Image (cartoon, rainbow, N blue to C red; front, side, top):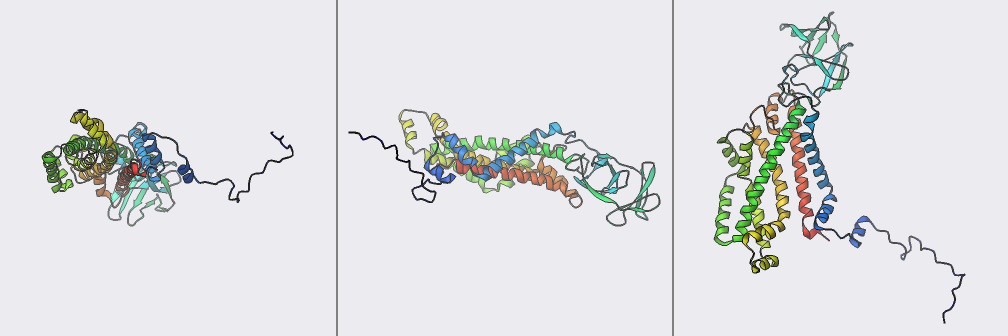
Length: 397
């Protein structure tokens, strides 16, 4: 017989938080261990990739440089090869002389540049005469004469009554935001174009290395025996010479241009890719799924293209992301030593080479392309490191 419920019973209250039988407070990591969503392989790779700060930071760096290089020229009013010899070596940050009715900047080659109150370049006052004995230069400015005295630094301006104008202030260059080079070309426009050329060379060289290295390494590992020995001896012979010296020797016999740089890099840097692919295929071809494919009569082409190479894509992608910064650095090095693109084409390496002549007076011309190269190197290395961890099945819990 079922007894009736006692209406006077009171529901027990929740135990206090310090009660050992109370609610369990967990962190994000502990909840991930207790419960995880059923994800596909790609979703799992993206989950582990985005949870690593350096990976996302590197990806953001690459995307910012791509945005700067691809869409930046649409908003720039200057071309990468447009010269203006009246505005050479203008820095992005001025120390100007306040005349009351205008501002003047004294360049390193003893010229005056007129600016407005917002830092925009208005023009260059006309030079009337020079007094080399007294180290003075006379300029015409707004219907009066101004004297530039360069006896000692900082250079000073004298008015009509020979009184020094000492009022100075700092302002940003609003016409050439990142300054101008020794030929009066806009540094920002040349950085955009140079980053585009460097990325294009690096990606094309990496794709060439991917194609040659994957095919060479996979065929060598799958065939084995004498074929593997001969193909690996070819790799060893290429690896005897330093790869940098080998690229320089190839580049000397080719014409200067974009295609010759890609060809020089593509014929050498596939060696590391081939070794990585060979090692991965050697371990994969002993798996059961490969033996099953051989049993049902699949051809070697089918086994390589549909089974072995797709299963080795993790190390292949990681190696490829590591080859891109190497190609960027090598292209910059070749351009720096004069074996890169022919003028007026610009790359980050040629900009660094051109900046050596004005390093003491205009160090920003070397600092800006070198900083962009560092961004690309760090970005691709961080992404490659993140992909290596994300594609490693041992890290999945």
